[in-house]
Image (cartoon, rainbow, N blue to C red; front, side, top):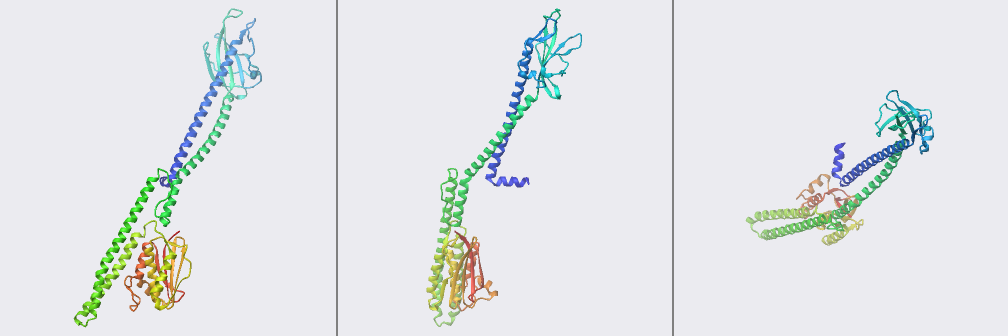
Length: 471
């Protein structure tokens, strides 16, 4: 599972950007929440103990002894909570005597009611303030501060020491901190959602040029355009320019290869034609000693021509079959080939028709290759047809199917594979090299398609050519 997630992150730029952004957003929010909450908690604690010190200062200032030597307060402390029973704010005065046990609760705030605070036995030195946590009324935890005070001016002249104690419920610290924490995490949660939405928008907007580039590449691959078009950001334009340079270079290489193949074919065809003419002329003379030689020359010239035609067609198709940006409309090619076939086979008065509209269909490849394949199929159908040849085309997903039917004698099932092989002819009486269907099969396979032969509804042979389609 971990390897699958790692592989997905490695292969997706969008997920990598989102994962990194979301991680740092979450880490920042958690760190900010913990830090702010801790700071506020510390602030509340400082304020809590500062308030206790204020109570201690007031208590120290108001403490005095009456005429009977009993401790009393000149003025009551100002906080009204000290007068409300069990309000959470308390004060208490104990007398400290080294020679006798301490007298606890000589004076107490009204808020303590009948409760006496039990404090630790340690006694702070004069002027010092000790802080403790103790259990107060109703079992609640209190934060406590204490101070020792020595009064020398007493009625009997004997100095006396007192422990001044103030305490407050710790909920006065925890509750504000809890409320602040709830509000803080809610606010940080809203902020986090906003940052996540911003990150999503940023990734979508930031990667939009890549989606645009993908669409442009799709158009090049489908043949709608020969190169990448569009207005791309400055960071992507170098890639677009380099890709267009590669496309231009490939087109130049393909054109040069096609030209060289054509030049080679013409260079070979000229001497072959001379040899064929010479053999033909020699065969007309009545020299018995030359008849075998002229027959051998004619056979070899025919074989050489077949190989030149086959390999020339295959080399030209191999150079262009994987070239991006190639697109050929089907209807003009069919119309042109039907006109050509009507002219070639005019003496037979064949009915050549296109039984379905191919205006919106297009082949993802070069026009010369489509003419070569479809021309061979139509020529083969016209040679064998009795009266009628029909052409049809349809699209199935990304595939283009071109169907050629004739009403000839047809072809036996066991012969169909044989006639696709190079140089095999179904009938030696019919003119031809035996390469037509073999060339069609090889060209179709170079484009990722295929040629199928089957029985035709017209009674003859049906040739179905499957090729890649484009918009």
